[in-house]
Image (cartoon, rainbow, N blue to C red; front, side):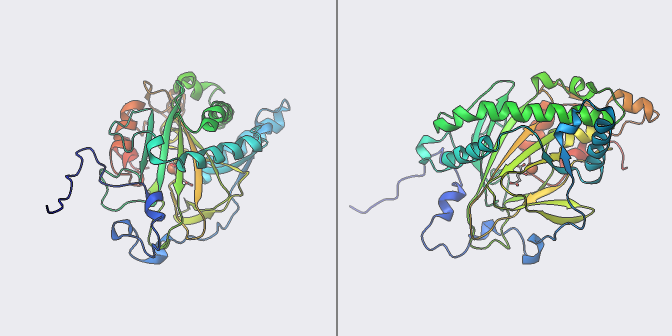
Length: 358
Ligand SMILES: O=C(O)CCC(=O)C(=O)O
Ligand SMILES: [Fe+2]
């Protein structure tokens, strides 16, 4: 009897994880549907002309009013000029960061059958494991696998590995504490009451997402992309990585490299900080590049308003600025659904709620 090819399972994903693809023996070049850049120099960036700002978190909560006010000013300047900064004296133990990165690595190295469902359809699914950015919508894929988990206000976590279940609650709580302190300082830097942003976005019930990125070694790093240029949807993202660089941010119209060591914590501003600040603190455009030497792992903790909050520019800010509102109020949940449901594309989603050019 002639052999027949079994029919494709209806539910079989159109695409598999890139880790598996990268492990194909003798893979010398990437498949054409991973070629993102047509000119290899497009993926390059220079080192920043000025150094990326560093914020000392301990000074933000200093009892000395002068010291605190100086720190608040520096934080405001970092948000306005860069939308991006490093933090020091943040109180998150280095061992916890390291162990969380290791547990994340362990997750990606589990056999596929021990991982959660691949590419679930619902964007609000609290545990999502997948590849690229939005593979259902893309023609060209990113050289990246991801795990996204809603960790607050309700904590979720994949069953395995056990180390992730053990470490994640503490790492999430510590990063939320950092975010609370930063938002207080940012509020003050905008001339608002310290707790104004916290109240406006209902931080107690904030949506926090653990977004882990796995970028395997890539045979053609100059034409592939780890993550396409985008801004994050939330307020502030706290990012750590396994000592392998790859993040680039756009600063003054130019792509610049962020080569942070493994123990540093990076912070970037998201779309909802831009909205709350009525455009004063713009969300930073960033992307990830890949390399052919080492696997890169990053953990981006996305911290947003609560899902039910209708976010709009802070009312006090509009009073100060003569009532000019630059963004249409929108429920964060609806924003997230649109942002995550479409192809990731620069700041396209933010433009949809923007009232005027500024
Ligand atoms: O891997 C990185 O450095 C960037 C990740 C990122 O931008 C994201 O997860 O939103
Ligand atoms: Fe991002």
